[in-house]
Amino acid sequence: MKDKTKPQASRRKIIKNLALCTVATLCAPFILTPSKAAPKRQIVIRDLGGEIHEGYKKVLYKPFAEKTGILVVGVQAIANPTAQIQAMVQSENLLWDMAALSEMAILILTNGIGDKCFLEKHQLEGDPTISRIAPQFIFPYGVGTNVYSTVLAYRTDVFKKAGEVPQTWQDLWNTKRFPCRRGLYRHPLDTAEVALMADGVSAEKVYPCDLERMFRSLDKIKQHIRIWWTSGTQVEQLLKSKEIDLVPAWISRVQAAINAGVPIAFSWEQHIYECNSWAILKGTRNANACREFIKFASDPERQAQLAEYGVGPTLPEAFNYIKPERAKQLTSYPENLKKGLHTDSIYWLNNQDRAIREFTEWLAKP
Image 1 (cartoon, rainbow, N blue to C red):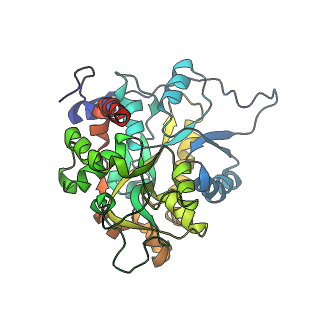
Image 2 (cartoon, rainbow, N blue to C red; image 1 turned 60 degrees about the vertical axis):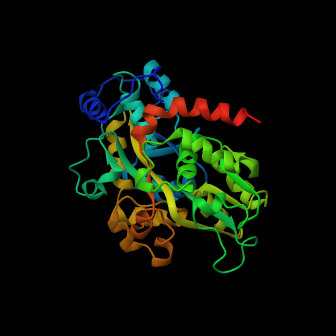
Image 3 (tube, rainbow, N blue to C red; image 1 turned 120 degrees about the vertical axis):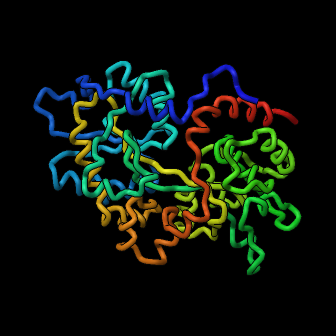
């Protein structure tokens, strides 16, 4: 049943709007440099926080500043801060120049709010390095920087027998074969795909999501869910503290827990992947400096260095500089991508409001 309260954006309309959305030349005041003296050049980037933020500081921010003289300030914010970006651009009061954003966030900011566009086109398609990025990870308003996924994670001190460890979403639903403390993401995005594949839907038939079938599938597991997690920090802590044993979780958080010595493993089977991209906020006076940073950050050897922080390269040749054992732990490793489902961001752009509303109502039922 379609939600009639919101117009449905077609792929053709989205492509048309992305092509027509103009690049503004507004000169917003840069409020982060209040000194009356001529400030040093700098760009402020909203990044992903956590361990990835530390990697960006070491591999990208500091070396870029040393090379160009342009200071990079990394700040953290809520996941996909589309409302914050809209407010900043509309008020011409930019706290950030750039942001690392998901595919759906970029769609929302360039198409989902009428004809208003909140990002600048990067205009880097002709750059010799950018042009080699895998085509599914580059967009007119975003240059892919990190391919990540939701994987099935489990504690190896609970599942010890070889051949008796959970590997698929159907295993997550199999409470008899795999009795343990389970968790799920408290959001229909990812949870819908997980529930449908657990119910036997093949990856190529997940979209458009059958939400009624999703809820029937969730009905079968609801009483066995110990915790509904809401953030990456929370799910990482839940795994570390032994509060849950089996859970869909974001790969960066799983890797962080593994790096901390927690006995955790995960499966690449049926993982759900997406890409975070560098995006330039509309109206920033530092757009050209942002473009220089994006080119710098897209160098294959720099992408390879970020693999140590669980960042999946978007440039295939980056794997030439990554040790094989590390490469196999990354979402964008070719063999891993073959096992995954790429999130359909256009579907979620059209259906997220309805799905969240119905999911919230379903959770409230006894």
